[in-house]
Length: 427
Image (cartoon, rainbow, N blue to C red; front, top):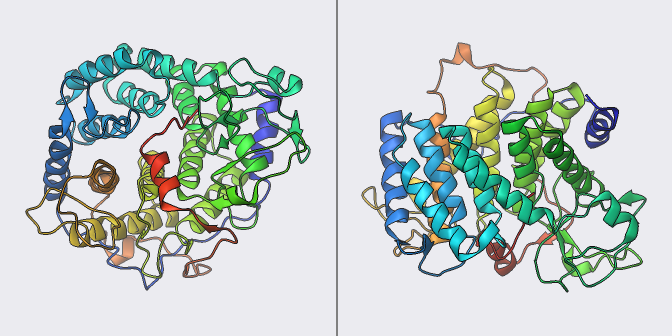
């Protein structure tokens, strides 16, 4: 393993040297899922078909025509096939990807397609999906700051200069939120696609890119006291940060967890990396900015999609019984039960609303449906509840109550725009 990579992983995880014990709060709402796996598959499948039926078959988009929004649905179609051991949506996805790229060559302004293609490749092992993911990565890489660009303070796709470093840390690995040549916003939506491509190809190019993005978030966006991620920064030449951007972001936090999960998985966990992941998960899943004492994600945005997806990714990869695996299972269980009981109007309804605390959805909304689908699909893989003697315990475990970040709650319009994919880049 390259020395710089070892050093970066150490730097990423140096905040936490002792792994945090995890135990769900007794105040959490319905953490145990009682439905059978067959029922969970049927519920998720019906909701997925409802979303697909709302696509415009001529361009593979939702009716609202927000370009990047449907990328998450494509990933969910592949995930559903993977969890149900079938290829029902494989050919359909190949057709949709072709339609979408014909609209904007290279998937420019839509990196969620790269994520979806990478996950589809992992599930179907069809090289066509890998090619789509690489194409998306190449497009987004044009808006990610390289070592050379950080040193010069310039890049071809932006019409302004930026500092080579802020707070003593390089801006290398930061990805601009918008392809607008005058937009200076650098977002936290990074790390994941590079990590997925590194996993698929073992290429040093993608490993290095994932590490750079993760280190950028750690250096500039990760709160070291509560492990919650800032949504974005806008560094000026003197590294001042606009106070209006100091918003802790459930979306960025979820993406950071998922990127770290994949990155750590392909490079082997160490104690420090594990401690950072545990601390981040504990803080993100109890932060009162986006969930109540009952543990239900209660923001009227898509942040729950990214948090649950990240935790489901870790649950899928870490099959060893542990307090972390049980904690994730119960957190997803809370969200799942809230979605099916509070976010839909009846047991027969296949339309879901936001927030997950209710009121239920009565008409189709793509963001609400995609966000709910993540909880519905993630719950398919959860193991049936074991007997009490099989559940790992820790005498040092303490129940976690909601924590409050020092930042403000992210405005609904901003967070919802990110979910709808207004040119956010996830590299």
